[in-house]
Length: 97
Image 1 (cartoon, rainbow, N blue to C red):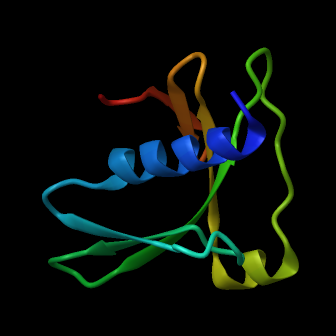
Image 2 (image 1 turned 180 degrees about the vertical axis):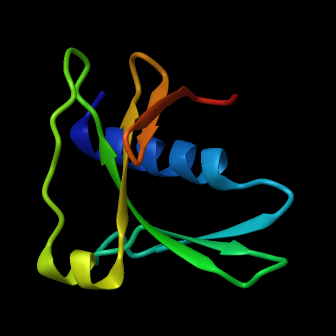
């Protein structure tokens, strides 16, 4: 799979993983910038900001956040397309289908 297709697929799978009955998920359709996904809680109005990264097939490689991402409180999401896992805030889960 080409590198740009992997990024798009990881982005969509992360959005699908974050969405549920209590949250809306908004996406950055340009694909440029420090934030890929915004998650909004319907009841409380709290927001979470995420940057999606594809994870390597064989091992996890932690990436550094930019200064702006640190200032905004952006969380990194790692999606492994081959193992079908997602890593958010250090916890690894199976991707929902």
